[in-house]
Length: 264
Image 1 (cartoon, rainbow, N blue to C red):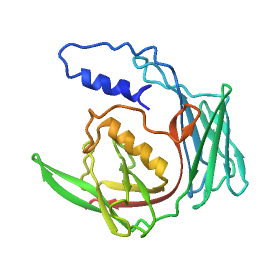
Image 2: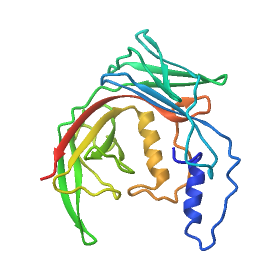
Image 3: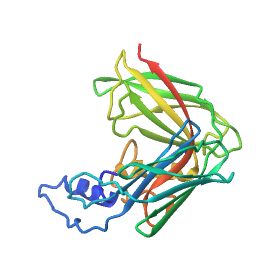
């Protein structure tokens, strides 16, 4: 989270286009807990990160929340009490994520209880990663394309993250629903206006099979930040979280597959 409230960030964006700089009175916005974490079918340990938001004009540093009790349970009866490895970063001990299993996160911090539930979907095979080259505005641009077969008669939600030469870049998070492509073979381009790929680069893409709550969270996150085809002047709001108790953030149980390609 770059600022304490998305609405604050978007208001600054709107006012920045005016000739007169307007200092908004946002310093007194109530601080909130931000919880972010995941369980995957990849080898653990897994981490839950807990931070505290700060005032809009404060230094862009979000302190970790120490001393919390963090527990992850599954519907098989397993319970893992996480240890705090550094301020605000909590880590599992033995938990192993499996598709089809429902995981419950419980956080107790400063006498307030937060909870979230996520069921790990079945994996969908990531067939291949290819590239396309396009021209526009006097520039050549290379984009990654993910290719896979969507299972029929099942609601599926996907998330993709992209790195170039092992470096991530802004707006490298993409989400996709099969609402209009159920049971079809999908080839979708990961378009970004924040990075350029050149010959010799190594492009790596992670494909996550996520649940609907996680899809909604990251979709609204992209809409709020005005990425891609989304309008940055849409009604600003914090993304819908699956965490109860008044925290921001998300908890996701998902599968992971990775493909990489070298640009010729």
